[in-house]
Length: 161
Image (cartoon, rainbow, N blue to C red; front, side, top):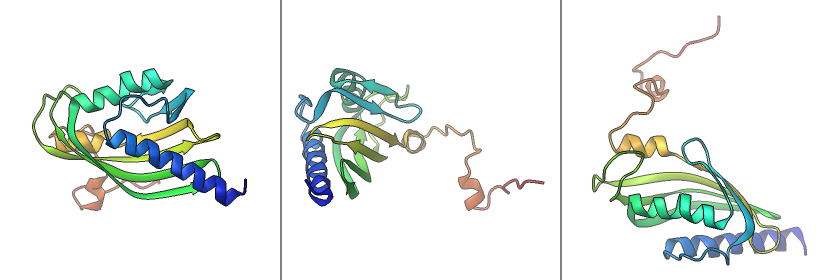
């Protein structure tokens, strides 16, 4: 298989999986290998296998956020790797990070990377911006010390001596 063909197959496999998630599918075995690894950033955890992904990511996300609309802005693929960035628009309808349901509509920014060696996803490093979601729900995880304050002029950044 040529690299271009492999890239196209990888991207097609990832888009099938994303369509399945968006449709609310419960059986993700069609998309992931048996020993699939989901590697999230701090606050998201690491899931070894499809059952752990479902129990410790898919179901808690669905419990906390309903009416989800996946808005992937860009996909990229190179050989057996694909990536994307975008956000989920959702209603905060259940407890999230200890915050009771607010009914607010939020954006959940994400970046995903996938390794798809043989038509199914084997590795999925992920970055989901939970700090942004919490800020939308009224909780500043940085306690007023986020570096956005440098950008908006509210604070002066330190410089090395």
